[in-house]
Length: 360
Ligand code: NAD
Ligand code: DAU
Image 1 (tube, protein in one colour):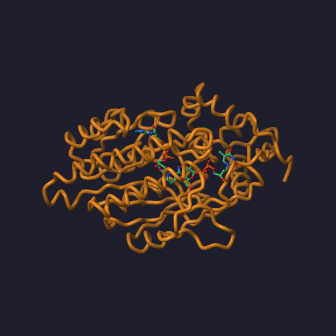
Image 2: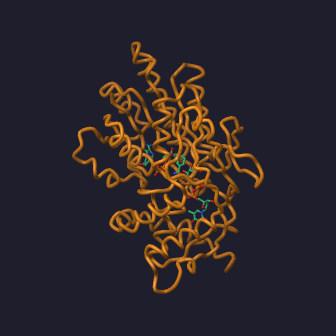
Image 3: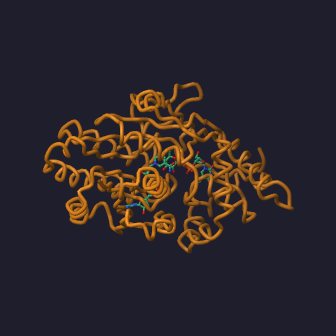
């Protein structure tokens, strides 16, 4: 019994692999290209564990994927490999189409070939679980109901459009070929090992370095936050108990305006690592908005809660405190990911993003 996990050296993937091996104990073959976002340091605790087999490679390398399926005969594919950052998709969408759309297609084709040749009961038990995002549903108004599994798709960024394309392909492979697929659409994650290009870790590393905390636009955009460990237990529940062909929305019922989140984060840092110069909140700087910035996301997670009995274990306050403490304890990890490439990205994304509003 083995899982083939793609993107398992990234933020959610690494948390999933660590959680899976600790909780289930079943071996994992981890296929990851190790882009800027992939980091084997995330999996250092498994370095001597025979249950984790790491393979560096691209999901678009069909011969490699076919060989891994034939050799390891996994009972499921858990597909997390993706380009995942909205701002990067605005600066350069090509990689998002290559990995998220074409890569998912390549993986589906190889999984279908493998699954078609399986004998019963392995064929019926096989699963292809595609990890996706709430961003495929577009942007909500302040009083709109939260996204459910039947909300029409309306992606607004190259990233969300590429994830929507991949979701449609997965759906079609179930409908047309009968491949036993599952799709999960999750809200914003935060927690250990998140690359400091995303809001929460970027704010933590900037605050600790005494740098400005760049809040886009008016800071009133709303996201629905979920601790990454809770996302991992939800993926596990969908894999173990989800019905093939179904979609499950995952979220923590923790909607928050960005500016409120950043202020809460600063208060958490103030209490865990007080700064002699005053509050970290003094570093908040409003900057030019992200083009096409979605105003609000919110997830209706009633289906996964009632059908699969899943519920998050962390509140936003407890999850955020754990996360801040993790970054405070892992200065080496932060230094390791802040390479020359990271600095180039910070210059590209923030260099010309002039300060918009001095104080709000
Ligand atoms: P991440 O950017 O941290 O990690 C992505 C991983 O995929 C990296 O290890 C990278 O090396 C690998 N990868 C990229 N292209 C590849 C390719 N062509 N072949 C093989 N490996 C490749 O992303 P994340 O935040 O961990 O997100 C994981 C998945 O979850 C993505 O599919 C994302 O769309 C989805 N998701 C993320 C969030 C979130 O808040 N981060 C929320 C919902 C859904
Ligand atoms: O909703 C799920 C999605 O959440 C995932 O599918 C994506 O992979 C993940 O990156 C995330 O997308 P967002 O664009 O919501 O995440 P990000 O952390 O980039 O931004 C969160 C909010 O904070 C968003 O409204 C933009 C804002 N922001 C972000 C950054 C990096 C700022 O105000 N300043 C910043 O510097």
